[in-house]
Image 1 (cartoon, rainbow, N blue to C red):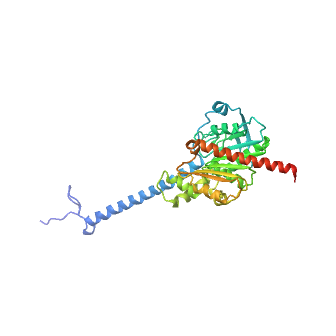
Image 2: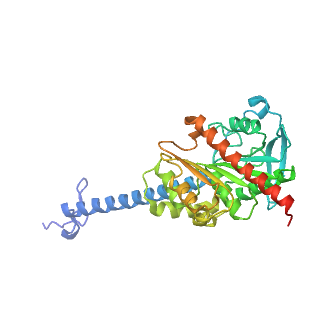
Length: 345
């Protein structure tokens, strides 16, 4: 009897594979290699997305810094009489809130305090109230105000001084409207860089004191990023510059960094900076100082001092130097006014 072979495998037995389809060690390695490659590509994509997102977050922080609310006022802090004031920016695009502290004298001199990035008009670590008291003692009106990004009532994005310079110009115009013949801007960090931008736009300013001047350009941005993250300058700076308009509505390229540092402004400027400043390189103030031609302009580079802390670490010398500068500016202003009265234009 002839036995026929069945085309079907017996139960419990595996079907036979052609020789070309039988698993080999080499095929298994190739499969593992494909899996590893896909995982590596996915990991690289994830790292790239995280890297880009990190710079988007940095641009967000640059345009929306966390700012504490006001905790006091001139009367509570220093027994200084003041009034709440609101005035428009010079371009009319925003309203600015502040405090007007009148002098005890004739009220013809005013110092406008320009606070730094991430702070409000109080800027306690400077500290602003101490300076307001010092200025009031020297017979100055004092205007303290919040840039829009620091205002709880009118919160807007920070723009690296682009829109803030218009708000500062509005503050200066307000001071002039109160009868001030002599207006000095005292700026800190980005508030100092903003003051230079306002001056570059033609705002009439009689003098400036600039402490720890910060200008938002590629070098300063990278210096600040590098304090937190070990990332390369390129493409980090271009990525932030790309994201910044989406967050703030302004482009960092609008800030004329070179012109701000290389312009001879004509009026006296007193530049103060620490050599250990890791937020605003001391070279900014040194470069601005080198460009000045006014005989009263001066600089004070403090060895070992850090960002915006020079008043606290060198209080007596800080007060002596700033008072002497203000006195020299006032003397020249008085002399010029007397000459103009004798020889009117």
